[in-house]
Image (cartoon, rainbow, N blue to C red):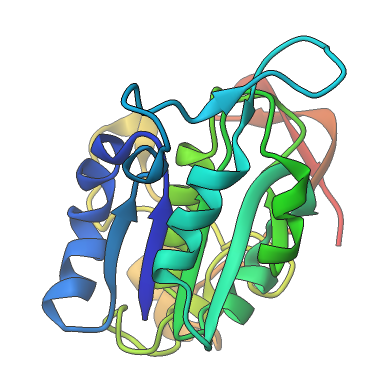
Amino acid sequence: MRIDFVTLFPGMFPSVMDASMMARAQEKGLVSWGCVNPRDYALDKHKKVDDRPFGGGPGMLMMAEPLGKAIESIKKKKSKTILLSPQGKTFNDKTAARLAKEEHLILVCGHYEGIDERLAPLMDEEISIGDFVLTGGELPAMLVADAVARRVPGVLKKEDAAGSESFASGLLDFPSTPGREFGAAARFPRCCSRATTRKSPNGGMTPPRPRPSASVPICSNGRNKRRQERSV
């Protein structure tokens, strides 16, 4: 899979895209990435990429000419172009699994107050990561890239790992702990002891946690804490 970011700030990406799982995916030849800067396609010597909305109003918009040419420079027949924007459909695990089947993703990082609406025909899809405001689309684009890349076959060590993680089936993953005790306050519950695990038909694993809803108090280690009520 190839992932290209159309961004005014390409320097933000290496620290995420060249580390951890993403670095291993590239070493295996399963994922590659790059950045295209609309400033390289600006029409004036000042490399201007923003302009005021026609008719007035607050803020600035990304200009059609530099952004459009940047997208067209890398767009191919099998490319899927996605704009990160607040108007888009909220991103989730199902969307990540669907996008992982694509050969080439172009993630367009909006900035300022948005992009020139005349560029809408170039976009195949719009995605949002939630109802809150960020400075630009760079962080959402990296989030999408990470979630999609781990769904590409061969990226994770175990082929079924992504399908058994939190949200893959609408539930959170089951509670877990490392295999060592470190004091009386953090002893293993009886259900997780070795003797109990041998007798347990499911290996002593706690069932997956449902997704959270309203908050209710529960008792944990002798102290009342606020946690999420979990209902299937």
